[in-house]
Image (cartoon, rainbow, N blue to C red; front, side, top):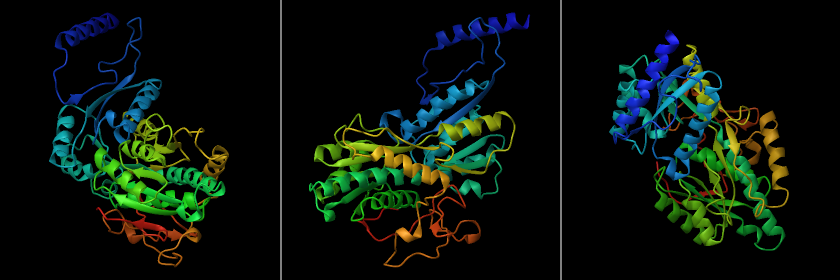
Length: 421
């Protein structure tokens, strides 16, 4: 009898969905099983269902930051379905880092989401305004740090050691420039990187410093100039910055920004590029060598399954290549330097094993001096919990005391052309 009633209910819902059509709401539910699970014969599968909200600063059309989150969503939906968990996703796209984010969190809470994920750095303050009113809902801020130290049990932070991937991308860039030096295409002092950064936050500083150190490890004469655009996602300004850097003599462009315009601009200027969040070879096949991205499905799998099973969720989560949370995009063999794939495999294994520390203090200086002591500070310039010493065992240990980066040193060899905090 229960199976018969379940079948009638499923049919009724199908007719209702067909009759309702698209309501035109800004809330989108593009993936997941909304009504529970049945197999092809109408039998109940016994899968658990959970409703998860995702607030995004962009949408999948940016082909960068938010697109990478959507890739994580799709992978997690598939992974968890195989483990007996159906995820109903509800999206809020193109939300600004202002009160509209607060409203989006409230709307998703009122729609019955059991987990709400905020995908941009500037969303966290607005999320924290809403979270106390919905203690039964799990709120997650990606790339942030305040949730890990507040007095709320239902707020959480998550990030990944993306600096590891940036170091490898830097190695690929450095090998290309050294190859050009060795072949006589450029002189050693012309091996200059132009980096498009969103803001002069620790997250960006950490990333471009790791990138520079990776390049320097294989091209000792390399230098870098950084242009900040004051936005996470402004395609026009990102392209303008890349163009200006190329005009200043940079032969390699990289980025910590959300769009593909630095890649396409690099190609139009006849210089090379390494990307972020997505494989950009398709938009710039003559310029883009490689990229790196966070595989968010690793965290989403863990977080959603943990909540479904009623287990405690880590307040502050961070992993890197050790857990597959940081990955490289495909290498463009047509333009990469000879031996790049082999070198990247070697360096990645050294990072995984701990043999290579990205911020080895013997590999850089600040004002001509080796760094021997530096308290770990967060992205607001405040000390992390207990003002921990980040330099020990010959390296600056990034994201060791909290998931959010706190590397803010301005090392020698990197010139900031402006500032944008």
